Length: 362
Figure (cartoon, one colour):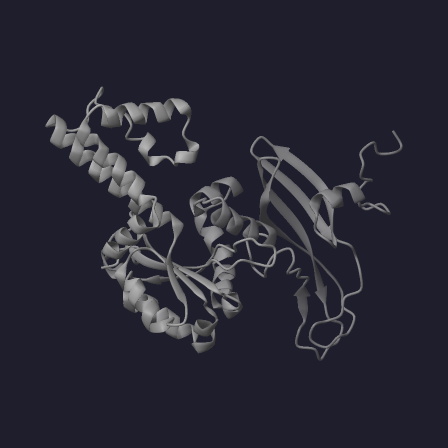
């Protein structure tokens, strides 16, 4: 045939770029030259369109000086790892007195200089880690590369985000909670440890203009003590502390003491999760004690209280009529079982929660 049958014309001919392929690639200024698909890899060859380029040193129009082929790992596409083969244009300055000599085109939107991942792949990896709870190793497997390559690409972005103080602006509701890495050794890093095991996390719980809670992690600091939270608040400055109107915390006296000292004007409240967790724990403890006192042993199959242990942890509004009937029969099976009923009802009342939380915070 005298004419090509593909969507792209023969390489080197006029108008060799295909708008449809470029649209699918989604990188402005770069054009697809070829696509190859293997069972476990998609390879896309691309280049920029020829244009006049000035020398970055003196501004004189440079002349072409060949090409340099760069291999970049891109975000997965169609459930397949993607590699971009970028045919980078090289240029030579015509000015004899210019110290630049030769240089290569750069495109920050595609990849940082000497980077192995595209900018798009690095941000995709961060999104997977943040929102999908993926590990770096899992992200590397999806990208078809090594985890060290992924970490080298995303670490500068994460460091820049950590150094950006603008994320602390406009925080009116501040949450704090402990976090423990169960898989991290307690040994010092010099002896083979992997860093701190106990951490304190600060979260922005401010409601935005759309009525949505931001729920974004602001920072993680080593330790889960009053000092760890106090030092972090001091680093933020008086303006930040003055803007916090509500401070939520888990039932830990150290965090409460830090709030009393540093956020005296803010209202300290316990978050809903820990309130419900404390109430459920109290009901479980009473149920186990009554079970032991009435039967002389731990819960077994067929015991009334053992049969409703899971149902007692559910909200009353979520129970079916059948489940409500099982609870009623279990409480009626023995007079002592009413103590479990009273405990559950008390935890739902304001007075019961107040007594429970007061004991938890000392």
